[in-house]
Amino acid sequence: MHHLAFITLALWLTNTADECLGIPGEIFIPLQSALRMRFSDDIFRQLSGVVEYLFKKHVKRVMIPPQQQCFPEGCITIQNFQLIAHENPSYVGVVPTPPNLLTLRISGFSFYITGTLYGQLQPIPLLPVVTVSMYGTLVISANQLFIEATFDIQKTVDNIPYIRVVSCSLINDVTIAQVENMGLLTIIVNTKYQYEITIKTREILEETLCITVNNVVNDELNSQLLQIPSQISIFDLYRMVFEKILPVYSESNKYRA
Image (tube, rainbow, N blue to C red; front, side, top):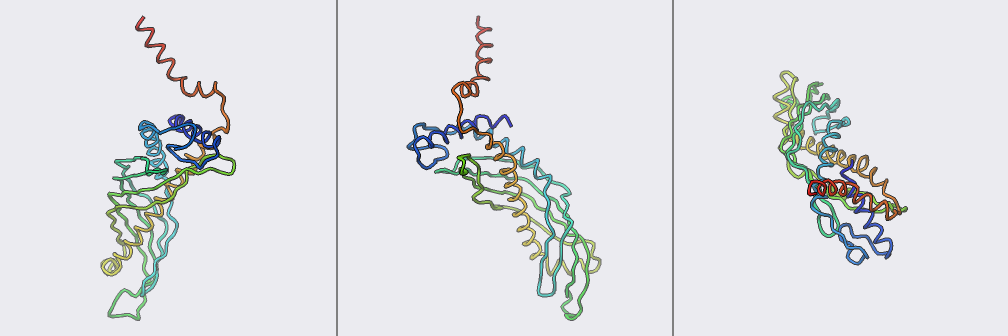
């Protein structure tokens, strides 16, 4: 997580400047603080790379709890969800959103999920009084996924900054959910309930992805922000900024000589 070093430093400087004047925090440009600061594009590129790595790591661990869906003809339970395959995002970006927010966009990824489906329905219109016990497999294909989340930066009572997820939503998707392995009932159930099951599946995907984003923020990023000191010496500040610059500078001067 060394890529967060300059982000951590920038947050500390902003936090300290605001603290000295006792004014409300402005995330990227403290307008009236003693120190005026703007995060560079390189900071956002590094943060985007960190978030991309963490999202890929967490998405492999996604766990979907059992779900229940009811229709006028009865209810079904879906459980034992398994992530069979997935495609990594083609784009992950963190960008500033004025005046003081961050926006995360993750797009171009796919999920292929299966689950066990069972329940009792009355799926045959000509025999409405006949309740059928059914058991099968729910197959979910979710492509062209695009999720967007908005963050801000808050302070704890101990003046420790932390990232807070303000909003999260699934912006775009091409999702198809259908049942399999139900024998003669497969076509009937898909014809009658596929639309409702797909809508439910999209809700499950959005919730799962937003939980994943929250886990990345809380378990990974905020754990790093906890290490930000409330005070820092000039020597430590100098070392953080120049420890990697000076060796490169010295090496270049050696070759010039």
